[in-house]
Length: 460
Image (tube, rainbow, N blue to C red; front, side, top):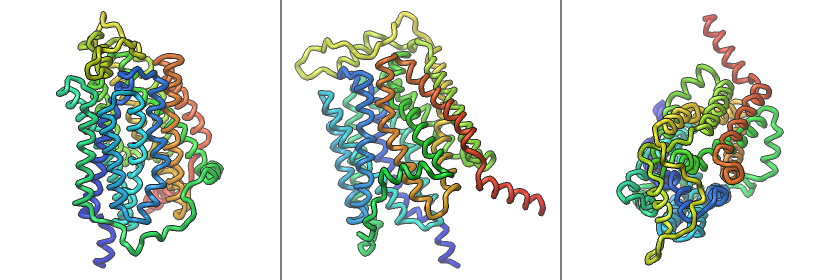
């Protein structure tokens, strides 16, 4: 009896170090996210080039995750975590010392390959949990992501404020957090994969393009995998291009964008941290997917229609100097190259644009917070138990692939047709997906089981 009771309780002594390490690792990433598009702009990068830069990280993460996962199965979790964290530290240091655009690309390529260690952290949690506590343990990874996307932009804002908007400083702060995560892994984390269990994985590949295409033909979840990919093309592009959009419409610098990211992060964490569970039990995952797509269609369209009114504290000359000054090398006069993003005129500043976009972020943040977990939850309920892990892995692969393409597509549309166009395209995409979902995602066996349980309870 005591053994059974222990199996049902999560061992926080084993899990908490992994949670803290993942959180601190993520702080480095989330400090950089609001800053990176403007950092690239300061080197004269066009929106398309910035889109390519945004794609570099998920592409390398897509390549690195299976590789690091297999290495951790063979050599243990701890050495792979440390080596990958050293790569992340190197990437942030290169970002901090960057004086040309190609160094930004190099830093993101290295960090993307190293950032794939999230799969190793998930494997360590799997080692440290039972089947009954695994969902709760892996859920803490999601909690770490949520906290990271709130705390990281706050740290970015503070470091920019203290350094007079020097874009190099947040990169060094991120490097400091990365170094701290290395120390924690080295001295606090206990190896979770026993020596006798290493190297027992089969030679069969965990991922292939053939398996992805075969999964799309699955009668119950094929449409859900298509939806996962298509929605992330839009939402992932929104996340990558947002800083350029607010620069163009509102004159927000990196500090201002950090505040906007915190606002969105709070909404997403509130949804994923508590509300989505209640909504899922009350309405079901299928209806949540419908609602999320509708909210995102409305929210993204409203963002695209944000009035071009810079914030009250905006100073065009000062922002131009900030963006140009970060390109200046020691002993060099300020560069004369034009900033590739059109800045708003500062003749009529006001609050309308900022209030508008923050209000538009509410349906966008709620929809974004609901959609991915609702899709994955519905997937797990529509496949056989032995298919759950593999199907979720394929869902993650579609998600990562979309993350790699999203900034490329968004950056290209931004360059060709202006700042409004990407958001209109993404809003239309969500509206089409909403109509498609109404037709193709019909009630499944999970709702039949729930209805039968309800009838049974009423009968008693």
